Length: 193
Image (tube, rainbow, N blue to C red; front, side):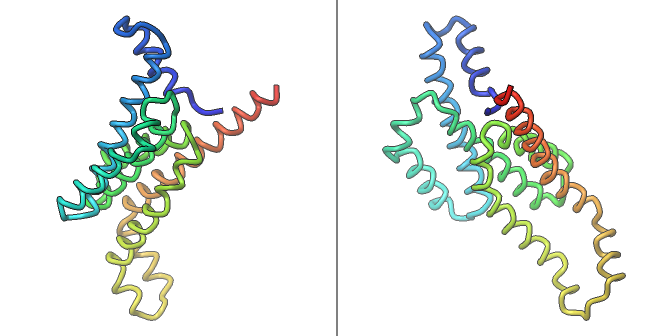
């Protein structure tokens, strides 16, 4: 049972009276979330690649894929799930770049939670790049520690020096996972009733 964010958005659009029926509101919602996924794909590319031509090429290819052209008008939650997962990745990249900003921690956590709630099977797509970028950051920060003999006390002191970093990283990882776990248990309970 997925979290009904897509359906709520479509209902809000339908209630505005700007569209004739719920089916059209659902298609419009799907299109809006498709373009939101385009925006976050572009922003992620902008953070990863310094070449503007690569950013433009990736975004253009994504926009022009026949699969995307066809399914962007279907009332499916997939583009919402992808947009939320890409937003999660984007705000973690900003968090890594900014040196553990609280604002980026909050946004990453919120988008991580929403991503897991809406469609838990989409979020793992961005987890692999997140792990890669976080490991790259950890290695760049602690590279001098890896060249010395293993000293447990030294490692603990290094971790305590950056406890805000580790706390934020833990929050951005654990809170979405726990939320997804409890939502899945709740929805399984509902299905079982």
